[in-house]
Amino acid sequence: MVFIANRPIASEKLSASQPMLQGNNQSLDSVFGIDHYQFSNATANSGFHKKVTTVNQGSHASTTVNPVLYSAEDTANIGVIQYSRGPSDAVPTPVTSIQSPSTPFSLAASTSSDVLDFTGTTIAFGEFFYSYKRTSYASGQFFVFYRFTGGTAYTNVAACSSGAAGILIFSGNILKINNGFPDAMTDIFWTLNLQRVQT
Image (cartoon, rainbow, N blue to C red; front, side, top):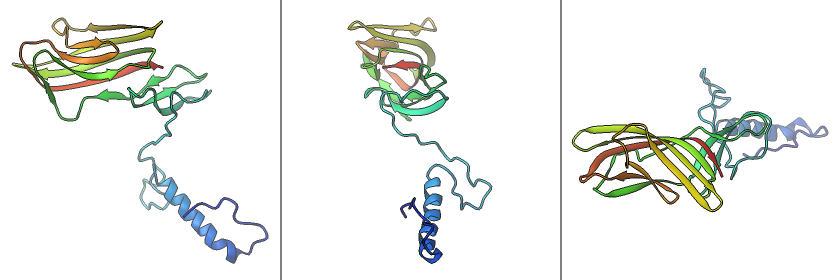
């Protein structure tokens, strides 16, 4: 039922207002239950959050003086990420990671797979974690830096361990996981943990 905001009216009899007041209570219970346990929930969970859904704010939300958690589509390429914005409209800090599919995948020799297209982003910092199998399992971590200024992209991927060179590469604005080995990489998983993203 739709919430009726202008009821009750002082001059209206209770018998006329009662159905609308009852409808308003039902509407409040229903709407509150979208992200919470409903008011009518008879368990100890009544009123608790089940999840938090935020409105898509586009390319960063308006200035705020209070710490706020947002969900925003920073660019069409990055997609929807959550970020926090502290007092005085601080620089956004992403709080969600970008993940590979929930099932492992493989790369044939001398092939690569896109991780993220940074087009539309001016600066980004992050960490990249990965694991794969060749004759045995291997894993590692990279620091990722991307900066676009004056029509030029400056990119850097620094390996945190010596045998990992070439696993993660930039091709233009696109970050890729790369197989530079002469045989296949299998059972691949990765996570990109974005620390800072500005558009």
